[in-house]
Image: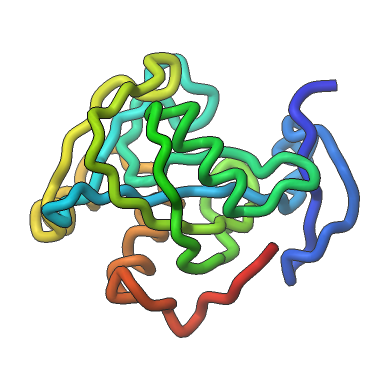
Length: 174
């Protein structure tokens, strides 16, 4: 068996433990913890996924993250993923959750925000390129080229939230 995740329902309640590949193949909902990163100047981190990435290779994204492990909270998973993918040991602040149906399979995204002032050490197996863009620059490019669909939706919800509050459609999952 591969990576284990918690299968969840339409209200983000745990139904059981399943293999992530099976969850994706059968289109079962599961959880993904993501973080939108800012630098001290307020710019947002944009990355391009590695060409050999299993999901959306070569696509641009604003989310750093991955599957929530069995028994792990969104917040714990977000902190772990920041460390694994960027080498960043910074706190991630929970923002909101939303059910994303536009992707490999339906997933609940737990979206977080982190401010990173330390140099990044991206995992080359995950991230091929990265840059910091202003919100205006990002709004101009988010609909151009290959962009991870869930990342595009998360960014819109994040920007609507005022990057400090929760969007009206969000709710905490856990």
